[in-house]
Length: 427
Length: 91
Image 1 (spheres, rainbow over the protein chains, first blue to last red):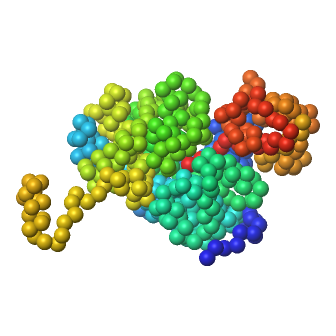
Image 2 (cartoon, rainbow over the protein chains, first blue to last red):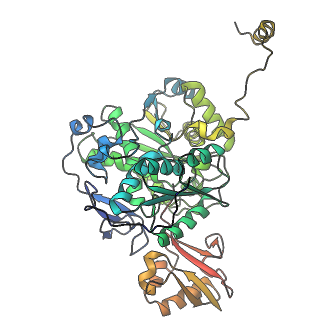
Image 3 (cartoon, each protein chain N blue to C red):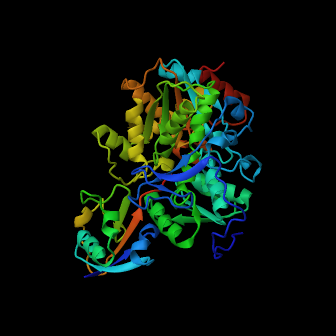
């Protein structure tokens, strides 16, 4: 059942909007400031707006006594103080898995996998959506939407269902079946667009401007993007309140990588971790590698590309935060590289076979890029390294189906199995 | 030669709230100059001081991102539709 979408929104919020410690919107390009609202591009220069905060004092105890979700960091996010009691999916506090087998396979000393496939809709997008939908409700929107490469659409549809909001999400029609099904099941409106993500994004930018809906990654983007900081907060807390020496993050729009860095810097600024070098590395698929290409060429400007890769969740040809991802890699002593589709599949298989973690294609990109950066001498095998797995392999089965098949098919007869076992030396 | 230009919310203060305006010009650069005549201040929002399209602005001529075409020199024949869209989204 699909709700009708003709009613106007936003309505007036019932009470004054609450954004916790957030104070204003600040242009990341020119520094101009604006009141908190649904603006997302700077009136002066079109630059992206970010949340400006007044954090006050935050202690380890404040956080550690909070809920086992990202809301333990509510005092560092643009959300009301009682956000944990509201209707949302309470994402976050996913496992930080010590990946000793993977480390051994790669010749590294210490590797951790931050496994965000453990979120409610099986990707890190639940984090950003949770904050965007809080902002949508504070600003009085009753319909929420997004332009999605797959995971985001499902995250918005699910969170909207729980919050009692209407959803209308847009995604390329050639997405993996697993991503279309895991979006449509939540009952909102799913618009499949015959075009690539960048075309969907453009369409949604025009819809958002005219219909008065809250698009989580367009007019709610300043709030939305802050959700990715919680990946960085959790890594630091789960390591015992310290920063890892190296982090490898996938790059689609470039937002996650830049927000993990922002989280680390905020924790240092608040005195919650000691300042220490934390190099952030970016990973792309060669079939959509505008940021990696700009990095390799030494450019600050990212030239858009037309994506062609199995890593559809990373297939953004014109990444809005690409230049900032390059800034982060350069400032922290990181680097950015890309891997082919075959290497992505091998990366998925390696993580699954060594750690029992089945990542989606984006996770394969990250694992394979880690290997590539090691080979290039850009990542120190002796230094503690955290890699981000942002999604669940069950949503991208097609990518590995050709190589993940039964070892053998036999009749249900003992003699047949014995013959197979002897041939393979299984005993 | 007349073309239509879709104006994003952020620039509508320059067009008296209009979401679409008409302009003349054989190239995108000429269209932007024509827009500036009718809607003073708009050009400086779309183009940076060096005259290039701003980093955070996407301009489409008949659905094609002009960064894939000839940029400001992209031809805008009669009846072309142009969209100006903030580049801030994604993910």
